[in-house]
Image (tube, rainbow, N blue to C red; front, side):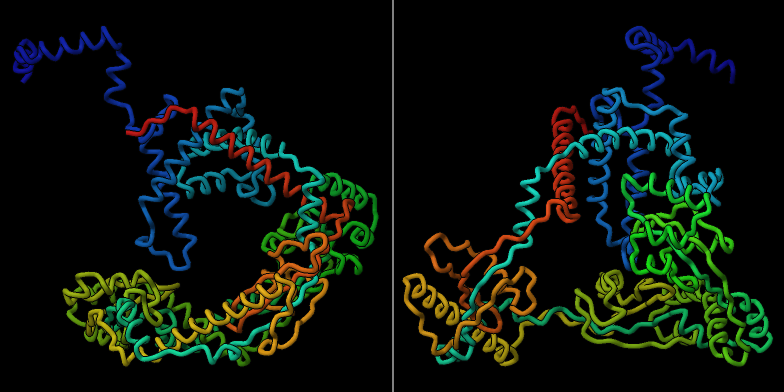
Length: 618
């Protein structure tokens, strides 16, 4: 063999290959040759920086999982993969542009900076201290390596520095905030003249010819959609639990096992709640120093807590078990020893200091009192353990069977039937899009196969087959005559009411009193806000959409037609809302407007960078 290699090395082909390598090395260098064999494929290039296919596909997978987790009933077939890939690529391009901009501005984090950020992140802590195992496990669950996570943090942190700097630079003038509050808190005086539907009843007439013409013109609207009747088997933990046998020995052992939980622990907590704002850290430091100096927690709660209901009682919240408080609050409370005060705890309400005042436990109830409850729990636990195995058996049996009777008999399940399922679904469980899509697939609809076993909820799976299939068909005129008549009468009534209201408006705008014999008298409303409950929302919207009367004008007018009739609205006066420039509402509105302006400026900055970037997509 060695001799063969030696001889071939002297041949013409070998000499050509060596010649090509020599030329390549002389022109491009060794890096180009090696890079040609080792470079990763890219999905885009931003200002010369490659976005690799590996990075792109990893983020596509993460984004797909994220969108699945947000579904009430996760179904991969419902994902729009093309849209996900587009969104992910756009975000990667935007991130690359922003990262390059941050680097150009000299913004960077050292490895020590990254370490300092990571050890402070609460999701990587156990008992208040950084835990390396928790960190590694969490990062891996995100589909990333530790080095990748650190680099992603480095990029995002510097990007966020620029974003925060621009967003926080937004300004809103006091005049803008004042005008917005004046409009938001505005009240109006107006009158309403109601025209009931029966006032125009003599003008509404629908003939058979009208009905037939409408039917012909809208024939496509009067079709019975394609339908199927289906048989199906439901497998659930509940149905399995009903078949589980629980012995007295098992029940006694379960009772002993659950005794600790059955003796419910309740904890009496007190707390001091402060706002999560720029002054929070200083306020917490002050409270802590005064506690350390021996001052009463209850007195400090009365002084500082913004939870006014509990502050009056020294922050006392009474006794409560698990499942009552916010998860973060509960975790902190149940980690305390009696008399101990927690570290600051953030929730959606603000920042809490929690003190554990007392612990009490109820007695374990006798077994006879809770026998049925425990028996059901134990049966359900056993059913959950058996569910995966039975599910696999049902999936295999249904796949191999020509009907559902055999699998149902084999596993002791019931075959049920349902009629009139359309491609838009039907009664539960056929309100699940994935199951309906399977039912109308070619193999099931025309091939006579069973569907796959579809998970339609937690611990519930369905397999189905088509019993009967009916194509879409035109409904006979007689079947829809009543619906058409009702529709045409309603339409004619609305038109007549609109004409009547417009005639009244014309009289009012000419300074004449409208004929109100069929409308009753004006209803007067004064000082109503935009959310006034005593008037129809459509009428209120109309009243607040009208221009305020000009000087010398008594009123401005409008009209609206609703399902209840028509209404003529006369706007008499507009009262701007009062504004307290020293109040909390004014400050919050001004901050909100400034935040909006900052976000607009940052969006414009992103668009500016993207417009100037060189982006290449293969």
